[in-house]
Length: 121
Length: 107
Image (cartoon, rainbow over all chains, first blue to last red):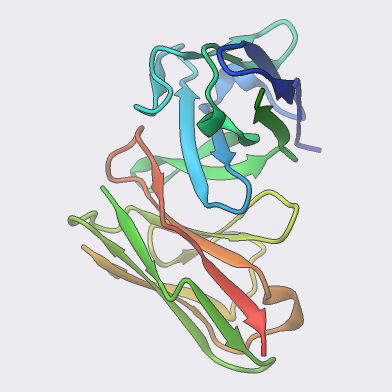
């Protein structure tokens, strides 16, 4: 069974750092394009970052230079290192597996349950 | 690319036909997806490439449109369809954006 389980969320002060993890089972993280998507409380969805199977990474402007996406192939786990956190980073963070349909990737077909990050003093 | 969904919320009864629209700030061909999200749960892909039903999704869901204007239609609303629906554009992949969401509530 394909499953994604996020962890690592919590309460953190502004300016602090946190690393989120997303443990995968039923498929190989390194063979897939994997994304992070976040959702502020009561708000809509915001794409955060993607890592390609080849290792290329991309970020939303709102997190560029502060967040880093990575993976550990031996643990089949995706990560999001979040530095210089701000109040506006408060959200539920989901990891998601992308799939390719027709001539585009970016369709998010498998999601974790999410982990809540709260940035507050 | 910005996506504007309308309405932001609607009330409907079981059995109603429901239509949600998504307008892109520039042409995105058919690079559009629709997701359903229930409270406390992760989103679920319903439709990709603007009009193709994801495997396992009931046929009462349909999508249409291309360019800048898109619609998601639920032909006969069922109790399990009360949720929030989001459109997503992939034209600027890997930079993905979502619409603001449409909450479908019980009348």
